Image (cartoon, rainbow, N blue to C red; front, side, top):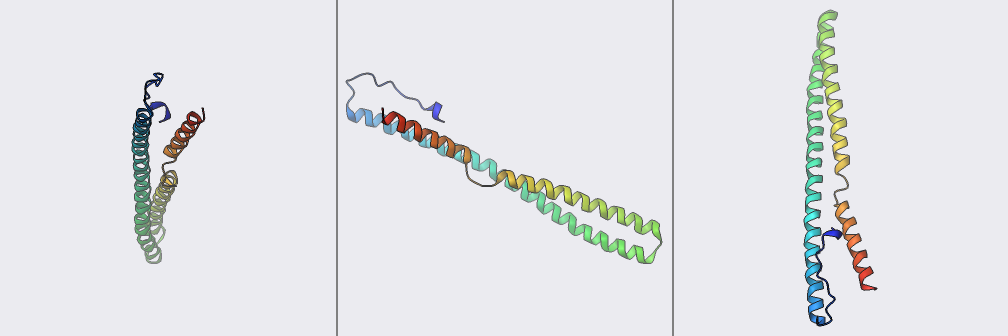
Length: 139
């Protein structure tokens, strides 16, 4: 947000030190509010990604749980009947585990995109603002 800071030209030598300090304080206050707003937006986006990733991992666990029941059904069918019934049950079980694996991989990727939960873009912007303020102070 370094480029969005509104400054008033201070070329008039009639400004008192108090006015200059007041302007600087006002600008700094505006800058801090803008950076806080940016941090909130960034954290909200990361929170949404973490929620989606967690939901997908939860769904993967639920489907894997159902898959275990299907696997038990497959074993029972294999013991009691000949190939066609258990083969069908085995195919259903494999499909459920495949769905669970896809959900787990997708959910894990979503969680990785959300971590670490700190507003990195805003921190970079704040650093740039501080550097620019230091530059102007040393002139």
